[in-house]
Length: 331
Image 1 (cartoon, rainbow, N blue to C red):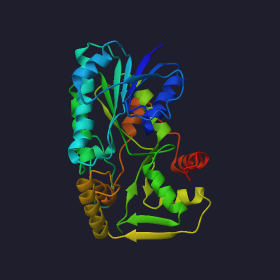
Image 2 (cartoon, one colour):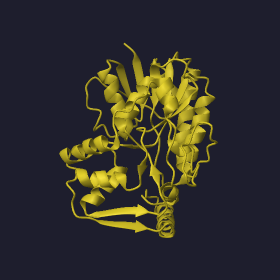
Image 3 (cartoon, rainbow, N blue to C red):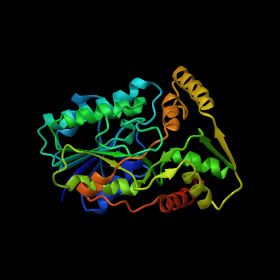
Image 4 (cartoon, one colour):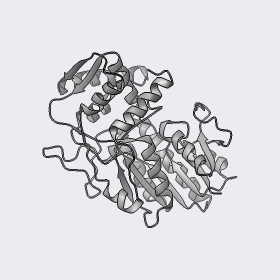
């Protein structure tokens, strides 16, 4: 029986990876913090392991009694009240984990690091848009993207058998950011930004999980980084249209704001967040994400080298997600 460690196990993507590891009959260890919610880690077969990714010495002692065949590093911060926190969690946390595994001489067969398409930033932003490829030089335009790119470099230089995955926007049950959009549409308001065409990509959480397990066992892929989407390109209003349809088409008002107005709102949010230490939904990072027009990327290498074949198009994924939100009283 293979023994797998999953960091970020209490989170959105991590909890689905845990479930799939159990389904595959693996000895499944879920790395958590003392403050982590265990809502989605109730299965009695799960082994909980408290890890402190911010302190390497302590982390080594926590890992010392264990030997894992596979490690999936899904822990990370997508929102922080201060920019430095992105690097502390995403870059330094990754470095501490991989350094500890290396120092302990753990004979791990594969490490999969969940990164993000955000490491690339705004590339090919003029029409006609073309997909971002691995040949493009990353130019991240957010603190999150920069911290993830630096974490990728740490992983690539770790001397461990690492495979990096770069999913685009991940949605599905338990996800809270896209849920805000669904809740807004249910409350009769849809909000969009900018008037120039925007090409958006998505991937359903279960397709990300499939890619993770393909990356754990595929041969000849160590050291590679793969973009992940559902293989389709959508316009900016497609996602909200499908949510609206899945909700039974409630009456709604569509508001499209100019980019300059979004900038003012996000600047105000950034100021408020830094002043109060609170996490805010709209800040300078979010502004750069929302104004980016081209989110296309090339998944051909993932398909040919990993055998990745996404199973969920946006309609199917949105319908399943809205159904879960309703069944669990989120909507």
